[in-house]
Amino acid sequence: QFASMLSPVPRPVHLKLFLGIAALLLSACEAARLPPHIGRVRGGAGEQQLSKDEMFAFDEALPWLSYVREHGVQQFVAMFHDNKALTSDELLWGDEIEYHLVRLDEKQKTAKVALRAEEVLEVLRQKEHQFGRRDGFGEACSWHPEYGAWMVEGTPRVPYGGYTADLRRVEHNMRLRRKRLAAVLRPDEHAITMPAFPTLGVGDFAEPAAAAGNDATLSASAPDALITPLPRFHALTRNIRLRRGSKVDIRAPLLRDAKTDAAELARGIEMDAMAYGMGCCCLQVTFQARDIDESRHLYDHLAVLAPVMLALTAATPVLHGRLADTDVRWATVAASVDDRTPFERGVPPDESAPRRSAEELAPLAGGGVAPLPKSRYESISVYLANCGGCMKRYNDLDAPVDGPSLERLLEGGVDEDLARHVAHLFVRDPLVIMK
Image (cartoon, rainbow, N blue to C red; front, top):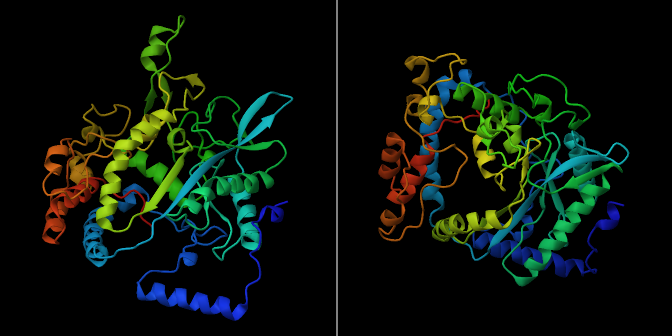
């Protein structure tokens, strides 16, 4: 069934002619300092997967935080100068679709998340390695893990280009991915493309039942068994909680009807685990622009268009089994990874959480007390286009920067607009450091 979904094999070509054309392409690409298009294959048959190395817990990483921040800036400056003059005539882009694996029981009339993503991904990779096209002709797929143990991500193996024919590839590849994923699921399982699974964390919501244990999250409703068993995801979950000093606190407004209790309305929909945000699915698009100037221009324009697209695709009316008075997942995701300390958030410390001294907070970016107006996953605060001073008119949001990082960037020859953007990123701490 899987093999029958492959794209047709191209008609035979005289081997010498084919090799000659390939050699010319390789030579031309080498002369242009560009890899050949057919070599731009995203890993998906087992290669280039997330690291399984052991990660530092946040308290263990404290001695390394300043080192990573400082050298991150140094690496950026070096890479900026290495790549700032590079150009390409080729537009490359691709999409990523995330799927919920859901088990539907027709007799019991139940829907549960199927915690089989790791098993399903292994089968998909084996079949892609055995049957999938890797030569740049025809369509192929690439499969990757996501945060949730019931989530799968699929992308095209070979990126799309800038021709009309590439636009025609998109739907075909999306259909191919869905067919290949459906082919390895059980008869009662389905790949659902919707942002949030409506009853996540409510009652008996997982199949098989999620094992007890919440060492990473400390959640009352979302056990650690919901997290894909890769060290990076568990470390990220635990370290957000440890840096913050308490569990994440996600609040969504509850939809008001004639019988909504006032106290319940004030409390809203409460969620206390990263899975409620990073367990949401979406469609993402990634672009490779011609050069750094075009990249910055595209970044700014997408920042303006993205909220419109978010509104047009609003599809999250239910969270944690309750009807929400919002329609999108954005604020839920932002709160689910909010690692800011109470001082950074500008709120009183949680009385139930252990207090940390100034000495304990000192290794953190900004000493753990500098005000940060947003979660680390939020809308952008700085435009990037280098337009001869016009940015001073448009960059009018409160975007705190890390002073030492800004100084190093400016001394390193990075223009002020881009330097402020990068220095704004470095007001955060690295959360995942491999041992």
